[in-house]
Image (cartoon, rainbow, N blue to C red; front, side, top):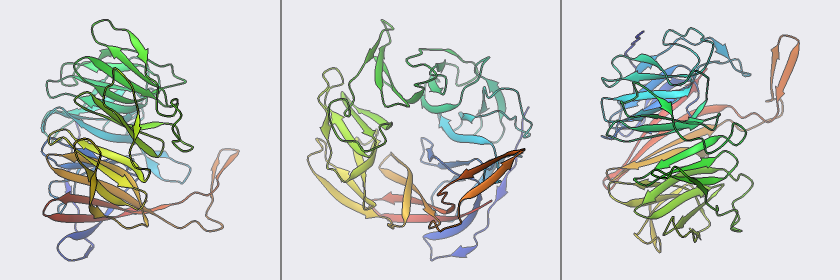
Length: 368
């Protein structure tokens, strides 16, 4: 089954040549980046938006009818990210329990696969059961690993056409939250903040002590939100802190300066970028001993995601409505009344592209 809808989004307000305002439907939780640095933004409103230059060029590449209502009354489909084998072969994942026509299916066990840069799509079932996919790791040779709510990892070496069960480092209670792969190991972080590595040859899984387990302060949230490898150096963000160890075989965690709350590693240029509590973007030298500020974004914005590739940095932020008394969301499901206290509505998103030549911005107003 295939579905395709191409539309252009026309700008509402023009703020000079480098900041254009668009309307987007639904919530965006990740920034997806193709090998040639095209930005793909996936919303749970059933849309995929793309931008090649982050400059007055945002467009819709896919729209899927949605029927499921959230507690806020929005109609959603839990599509979250696009993962790339190359610029043409890619797939969409999340908690996909609807087909490409918005028809509800019994189980969320699908990806949406495209072999032509999103011009057409097909459904691929990756398991007989179900799983909410939290993370994906792809390679340009057609291999990919993905995992999530069941703890099970799923593997393909056919560019996503067929899938099989891989390792299962965690149960459905711990869940597989983040995945990182090199030539020797599969590194997996659980939703509870555990970390493990599995040897490709011996297929033995070994626990890795995390910074929190080594006594470092990481804040209230102990999840490992991001991982990257720079040769033998393992870098990760646990809670609100970023750490590295120069050898993943001999773990000796070092904390980056305390203001850093997230990072992105450019695997092509081997440069590491950090995001501070003050929404400042910094770039580190090779041994992380020094850094310099390269850009900032407004303190009213909340970081959603950051990705770096080929010497360019991309940042997605959101702007929240200030919480006021009476903003709690009350929704009725049959005879049950559900109240979400302190709910802050997302008003807008901003997409930044930062290069040595400067910074460009696309502003996006969120609509229900």
